[in-house]
Length: 313
Image 1 (tube, rainbow, N blue to C red):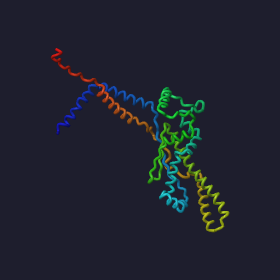
Image 2 (cartoon, one colour):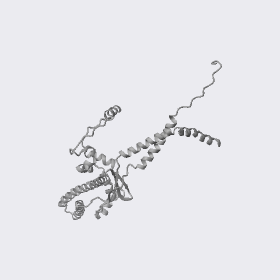
Image 3 (spheres, rainbow, N blue to C red):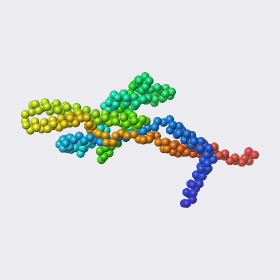
Image 4 (cartoon, one colour):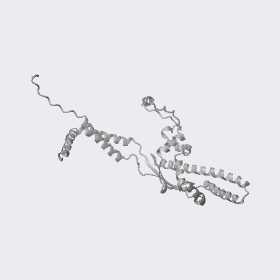
C-alpha cells in the first residue's frame, strides 16, 4: 500500500529531467513572455480611477415624511422616499436623457471621442478601417453576422453606450450613499465628466418633478374654482400648498434629489493596468507554456534495435 505513492512520485522524475535538459527552450519562452509584457506596458494607455459619493438631498418637505410619505411607503412595501430617489437617480445616470445632455456639450464630446475628432479641421472624421477589415468583413458575412452600420458622428446613443459600459454604480440598501466610479487616462477630464453626468441626472429628476407639480397645480386651481364644499376645498388647498412647495424646491439653486457627499476625486496614480500584476501573471504563463513545450516537443527516444532472427541471418 505504501509503495504506490513512491512509484507515482518517481514518474515525475523523467519529466523534471526532460525539462532541465531543455532549459534553453524554457528560458527563451520565459524571456519572450516577459519582453511582450514589457512592450505591452509601454504602449498601453494607463487610466486613473475617479470616485464620487452622493446621498439624498434633504428637501425639508415634512409632507413627504408624514402623510404622502407614509402612504407611499405603505404602497411600496416600506420603500422610503430617500430610497426611491436613490433608485431613480441610479437609473437616470445611464438614461438617454442624461446621454442627450452630455451630447449637447461639445467640449466633453470632443474628449470622450477624441479618436473621431480632428482638432486641425475642428470636425468629426470617420474611423479608418484597419488592414484586416476586408478579411474580417468576409468572415463575419460567412458566419451570418449582421452588416456593419455606416459610420456616423458620435451622438446621444454613442454616449449612452459609453455610460452603460464605463460608469460603475455601487449601492448598498443599508447605506444611504451611492458610489460612482469612472476610469480615464486624463484625471482632470474624468472629474469633469463625472460631475457633468451627476448634474444631468439630478436635473432630469428635477425637471420630471417640476413638470408634474406644475400640472397638478393647474388642475387644483381649476378645481378650487368649482368646488364649494368647505371640507373638499380645504383638502384641495392643502394639496395645492404641498405642490407649490414642491415646485419652489425644484426651482431653488441647490441640488434637488441627490447631492454630492464626497466630490469626484481621481486616484494619485494610474490604477489600470497594474504593472506588477501584468509582469507576474505573464511570467507564470510563460513558465507554464515553456514547460508544456519542453514536454511535448522533445524528440522521442530511439527504440532499441531488435536482434536479427535466424531466417534473416
